[in-house]
Amino acid sequence: MISEYDFYVNIYDDFIDTRNDENERILWKTHKIIDLMKITDGKDTNGFMENSLRMIMLLFKYFKITSCDLCSFDLFDTPFNEREELMLTLQREFT
Image (cartoon, rainbow, N blue to C red):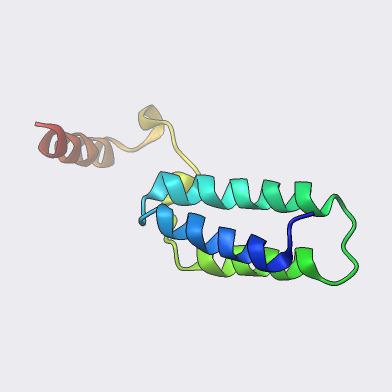
């Protein structure tokens, strides 16, 4: 089993490597939680899993999640004026 210290260092190193990229941060969080579950394998007598999970969640806390990450709506179900505004924004962004 990896030492607690080594796991914490690995958490920070990988977190820094994401360089504030949204997709990388989401993947980082998911991978670190999976790694933690594999390492502890449900056997955690000294609080290592809880402390590590708290650290992961605290680092992720300051990462802003946009509404697109939480849910999505079908474009055809949006009101006409919002759809037109979105189309204009997309045209400006991609032309």
